[in-house]
Length: 60
Image (tube, rainbow, N blue to C red):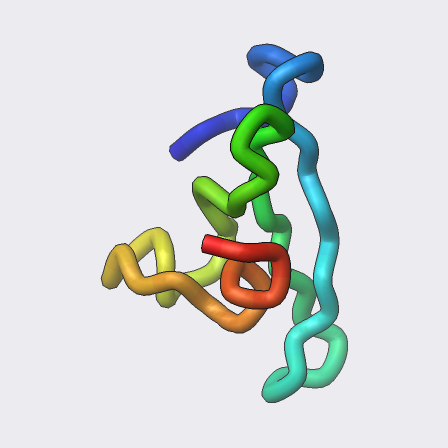
């Protein structure tokens, strides 16, 4: 998983509230050069490597 704290000039963490689960937030990592989402804290991405709602909203 990409960590935005490793290189804050290259990555940004964006918090997006889930549309399905109230009170659940996606922590999406965005590459500032490509303007695309590269990782997320949710199960869709971490377990299945599938882009989630939050990643698709930013751009995958």
